[in-house]
Amino acid sequence: MDQAAVFDLDNTLIRGSSLFRFAMMLVRHGQLSPFVAGRFAYTEYRYRTNGTELAGVSQSISTRALSLVEGWSQDELLTLAAKFTTKAMNRWLDSSVTSLVQHFNKLGIPTYIATASPLELASTIAGRLGMAGAIGTQAETCNGIYTGRLAAPISHGPAKADQVRSLLDERGHDPSRCWAFSDSANDLPLLASVGHPVGVNPDRVLSLVCAQNQWPVLHTRTHRGQPEASAMATAIPYLY
Image 1 (cartoon, rainbow, N blue to C red):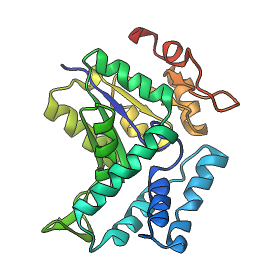
Image 2 (image 1 turned 45 degrees about the horizontal axis):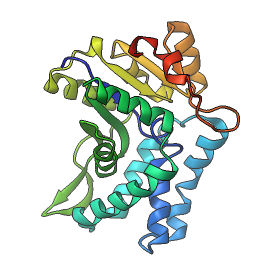
Image 3 (image 1 turned 90 degrees about the vertical axis):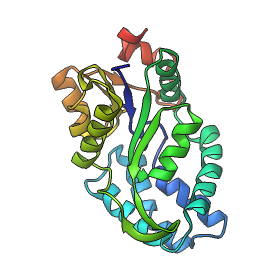
């Protein structure tokens, strides 16, 4: 199959910041202090109030998260990611976008997550949705324990686009026949690298770029926050 579809995670597949929501779950489980978790709240606030992702915020938060898990076992984090995903499936995943993932899956078109959030989190969510895999920020481990260092560049901006291109090439997908879905102008390198870029509840800058380039836009929520029934067919008619 030379086609594939790549989905951003935060504010695309999941409403808001996955890392913030994960941090709050760790607070409730007593594994993270409320003070530390509060430092993630600024990003969530900007997501909610401005509908945009500040340049560099994903990178700085992902780097900060590395220091928080230093000394943890990878198995422990994967267990917590599984618990988080169970809750996320019911509360925070955008039903319109997950329906689109399922539609691609039914057509036999592989789907992937690409995000600056931890790979463990992205992979767990991708697995629950029946997706073919995920790209995320990779933390270095030694004998199954996190060192607090990166194992590869943070999956954000141009680095995310490069990692997606490598994945598509490795899996035999033709970028010109692939889709990419994102809410953020930070993903313009990714969106511009595929034949079918789609804005999902796009931020201000991405909205302008979509209009200028006649890229489809998927609005999944009305002013009351409910999914629009015809959103997918309107934005991506050639799949229906």
